[in-house]
Length: 349
Image 1 (cartoon, one colour):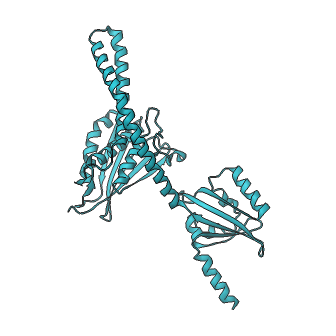
Image 2 (cartoon, helix red, strand yellow):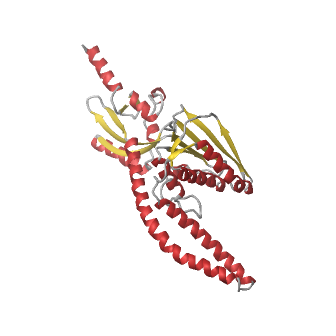
Image 3 (cartoon, helix red, strand yellow):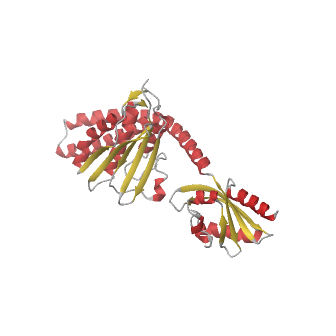
């Protein structure tokens, strides 16, 4: 009878929907279930027998908040909190952790619920709402500024004909600044445009080659070579707005060029995923992006460039998502950054 009970308990423990972890009073990990291994992305044999502080180090929480959590657990026998962690494989996850002392056995039970999917959905929703608000604001601001800018540009051109050499140098600076303002306004207006304009079937591979050839002279001026690798052929086409997708690739290559002031190579790899999707990877050998900034690069107005608006990547994200695709980013400081654009394919009707 006792053996059957233990077997039933073991089955419930291993197949419980949340992660479970037993810790003794000394803080040593006694056991964890399969779900906990999945959450932490590690074999339990590498954790069992070690102090639980090894797991606590994974939490993004500050030392002060971790200390407060432990104090509350000791005082009340129960404590819970929400946290972000970097798993043993480096993946960022969002967890709800509840730890309680089991008085009958003098051990602590930690129950961990993976809320990563819910948090990512919430972030996407907030991102979409913020882009919608920014789009409306951008359109009104851009149109209000463009009219006086057109007048300024016209007057500077007239003054160029009558001024002396010193004046021409000053006007050249003014014209450069006006040009920069126009570029910023263009980015604002791109954000304000709807992302579902003219949908048609087109070959993504051909579009990427077209963009790469167009950007090649600009790259060569910076001592950068664009290298294209096509791993497979496909008769499948993509249904979407060709101009919008083109803007995304142009922006990505432009960012790669700007990230490589010392020159180098930009690798564009085109591959197919089970003939259901196409993956376009644009990988540079640039300065890279710090880990704490990588999760924010698609947020509106967030930028790592001194003269950037922070709208380019947020607009690219909006376009790709509206076409049913995804963007994956991997970056390492002083090594480079890789953007993977994954777009669904289908046979042309």
